[in-house]
Length: 156
Image (cartoon, rainbow, N blue to C red):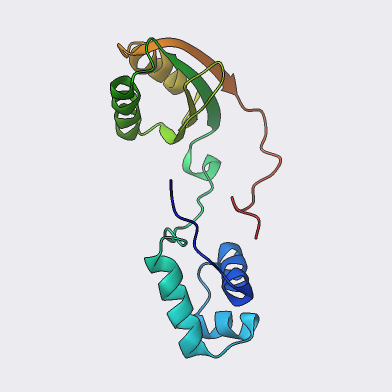
């Protein structure tokens, strides 16, 4: 388990603003949260060092890049031993089509968020890679129709 970091109101404002716009300058950020630039920069660095801020990246428009299919796969393993769970987790890291993966409770063991160029590419992955994995027992897929919400992952 990750240890929860104690944050004050200014830290939360910083996180809120950076989640909205991670490219703003430190001066702009400081103005938005109501403190001067040097302490703002120290706070941001502390948030980075403690792992509260994991990183910065650009949000890409997948369809504009030719990635038109988003799907989720619910994967059940044959065995739920720690070794099998770790091995399957490691395998997901090698599959470029899998953009995010979670271990889950319930009927499945893993939930995979997949992004592919098209249905054929996704089907090939499911048949030739995912269901062919020696640890996999069941795979249920869900093709998305349209994304209706896309905001930051954490409400602050």
